[in-house]
Length: 422
Ligand SMILES: C[S@@+](CC[C@H](N)C(=O)[O-])C[C@H]1O[C@@H](n2cnc3c(N)ncnc32)[C@H](O)[C@@H]1O
Image (cartoon, rainbow, N blue to C red; front, side):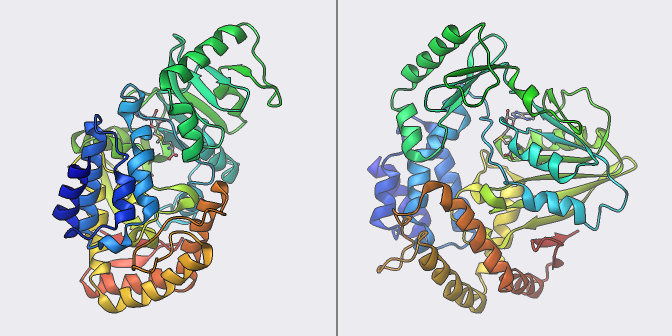
């Protein structure tokens, strides 16, 4: 493993990665080629984006070394895990409402690859109470089992485990469940057998078995359908959102998906494809609009924190030919090549990191880890606040100027994202 880390360090970072970062990478499971190639792909993108070794925090090393192997599909029998977080698409919902492209009175939306529990789809249904919202996902479970600590496992119709997750998904809690994955699975199978025939909807009861758990999330304007891209029986809708799904697929699938989406949109309908992390940080997306038989790409947009991300959504490409990752990297590089902008950005942003205790610069000039006194549930909301402050202090606007100086047709969109218009 040490050799793999050193090779990548020399190849992408002139051997300048910090010792702390390299130590965290040593935890990458050597027997997982998917993790090894994903890390290398991310390093290639980071390097292409002109990001120096000093900006790779110890926390990022921990995410790559420990968390990544747990959330990639091969850890789940090659299924894409349904991981999602409440509030993740708040900025995207707002943009769907305010977007200049949304000229007609949109009324229906399909959130495809909605995940489970379908937190972001529920957020959307609450945000658009007059719309009909459809959450669609191939992995909606038939059974859900919570153990005594609130950790849960989802099961398919045939009673095989699809996914399990700690009640609070911190690295420490994941460690407890994954220390012996087979033991955890057999514990959940045992619980399912014990609770079979005694389902409950009472959230205060643990352990608990829920049947057709997706049903409890349905409301008058929200329903769910089991299905996936190319395989859902649904009438055309005004808006399609497909977030944190297509970066698992190659470009051939992406193109096929576009053509299927076109057939599922009403005239003038909008398609939003992209990715992000918690609290709408590291957001990037393309907006398409259907006109006759054509799906026009109207814009590509991203949040300013993608130029110096805390986590990995910005680089989360599972295939070398991922178009969106390449496009985002190209614009991040343009912004980062402007020394005057970056000087001003670092002067402000490094103070933010120090004030919040989240990956501040250490005395050697490298981004560090999180202050250990910060509760795990406070980390991403704080990262969200850091992004808000960057916008309030005009760094998104200044970056637009940098893009324009490079000849790009860029403007700030209605939610403060940097938008490239086509
Ligand atoms: C990481 S989750 C994203 C959840 C949510 N959209 C979000 O942004 O937080 C990816 C979801 O894509 C779903 N998925 C996998 N293959 C799919 C397909 N062919 N079509 C639609 N969704 C798919 C998975 O079941 C999983 O729930």
